Image (tube, rainbow, N blue to C red; front, side, top):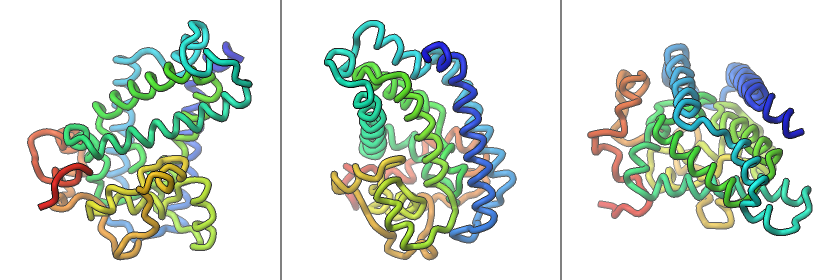
Length: 280
């Protein structure tokens, strides 16, 4: 199993990414939730190019993979699950759930620390909301996120299989819950008890700061409910809400790669969004 995971990790993640991306793109075309605002072609090309840059940066600057860290931790006896006699099935489930909680806390941190928010606002500055919003992140944020994730894996001693399940699930659900897709309201109400749905996460991309600072979950929806950051619906409704950051509506700047890469630097607009910043 170890050798198979090591040899096929890249293909497993790539095929799942492409499969979910195509499925969500077709769903958005057949049953969109909201009218499209920005042009799809150029915007998608920019977001996919940004994702390719992020992947290359991680591969070059952080050659160790998440599964590789899990194997090292297992061999060295690092982490909670490797120090105590926990049944493998329990470690498998706990690894996925605990890593998801770590990502929730990381997401809150990127909204709470102004310097980190400047990086994360690249994700929120998207003028529209669709499947490719789920891959729109600044390269520096991606590198920091990977470092935090690797540290969490080592500290937990999560099994390699649970790490792979978590990686695939996080990538798939990130694209799903950013999808501009329509779900029947009763079905959405039940589904969001198990996974973050597009209507639940869309609230997080509202232009209103108090809505932006809610619904931080990417995969499991429980953390928002347990820790008081859950918001059921946007004040203006999903058809009336505005996506993005207040004062940032220049499509030429926000939807082209050079502008996206420069968004964290030099522009104070949007700085009032961090959780702990005093409102004026």
